[in-house]
Amino acid sequence: MGSATIKLGGLVSPSGMQEIDRVIKSFEGVYKESVSVLFKLNKPGKVKLNFDTARLSIQEIVNAITALGYQILKLKVKII
Image (tube, rainbow, N blue to C red; front, side):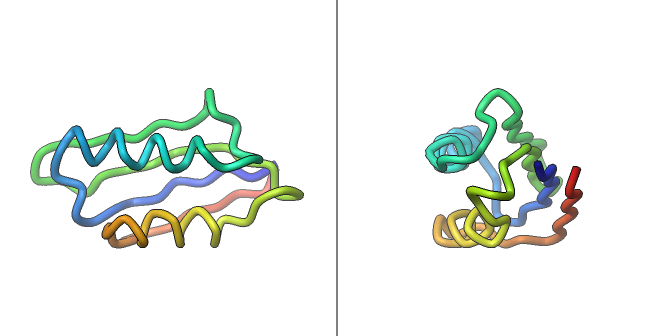
């Protein structure tokens, strides 16, 4: 299992938060109950999630987030 924390640039609204949440939860291998997308005005957004490393790579998640137009400012991944 992997655990990831991703800091995002460009997340400026609650609707963006919902969009990221929906896209991440659509992946097979993401533990949906672990997904948390945080948004604070004038601060980078943050995504936390757990995922099955045998079924999904963090790069696939990163690619989906950047395809939505958000920047990855920092990525921290732990393999548990």
